Length: 522
Ligand SMILES: *Cc1c(COP(=O)(O)O)cnc(C)c1O
Image 1 (cartoon, rainbow, N blue to C red):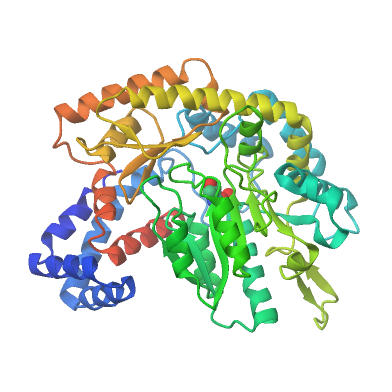
Image 2 (tube, rainbow, N blue to C red):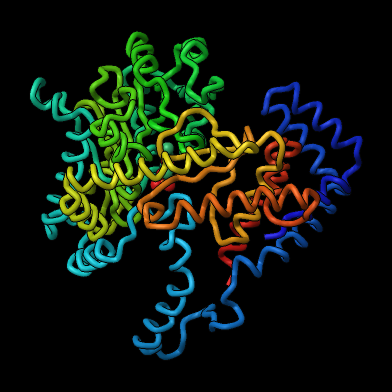
């Protein structure tokens, strides 16, 4: 991907304009910056220049986003007669084989968390058995609702719910629903708190307080549901700042959030202190354990130092945990959990006056795939506690080896003290250039912003023999390459470099929007 034209774009803008923008950015509220930027970028001359740059940039990108154009027929409308099923299967198998080795051989950060052939084949069989089921029709497929209820119960029990089940009445149990992924779990929880606060406290201008490292899904929830998001900076250890969080609470605060751990740096927030703070102020608290939900409980059992983060803490009122990450289900499921049935009811949707009949659904979707839930149930049952413990042990050992190697590389250092999702950076080198060289060597790592860094989220794919050695070796060679060629152009380094110094956020957002447009181009 060559996005160096974005750098050209900034260079070509009048330096005085850029300097004014930079100064403004340093001093003002983000909303004021956005307004100023909007005015500058709506000047016809600037706008024209930007459009020209966008077009040339996207032309560069198109080939890498659409690699199959020249070789495979594209269908912009229905073929006249249906294609032979065998042809379709053959073509898909061909495409799959081109893409498979990258994730299967352990070159990607996160993405596929299990990926062993026997596990995949088992889940594929489960999909085939359940491919027609739809939990919206719970009367036709009661098997699906059985799977979903048990997925929720098993997840809740693992995250502190088992103790509560013994000691409290049915109304106060940990309960939840199966959603389509971490983002949906988070959106659902935030919507639930918005509706509950409006109903019980009359809050019409709701606010949520999140650490700056929280997942983008919370910002999405803020935009979708009109909840003001207050972002509190994290400390030097990348953990949420409790004192700053306390200062941010107002009469409109509906929920405080912590991550266990956060996606960028893999650090567990001080959930105990944060949730107690929330409880003391009568505010809800959500632990985002999308990433850690299916690994931290086992890490703890293996003797790792895991701070409390789940429903054992009385202030934690909801959690998100992704079955489709370290739960090893196929993509498309996650669990959102609540303390008490009353809270969960604010999430539901019901219609009693629709001409289509009495209608209800627990999540955002109407019809959805029961097969994904069946696969999730099957993955959890087939792993069992022992399977999760063994998988977690392998992953944590592998992560330790990677951390040790980074710690002995003088040019690099690790951000904070993570367990299995490791962010690292450099003071002497452009870390994005290191990432670009790694990309050329087939690695797919995540570039982080503020501060500039790169991360690798360790999965079972990395526990295969030879993967860590290859990673460490390639990383060392990438560092040497960047040292020898500090002025090399191209790659993602320029765009990440720009984003990290936030010269013009709206421009970056325009680029991303056009990137999405491109994904849907034939
Ligand atoms: C992955 C992740 C999410 C969002 O999950 P999706 O399944 O991608 O929607 C939220 N929070 C954290 C910490 C995550 O790692």
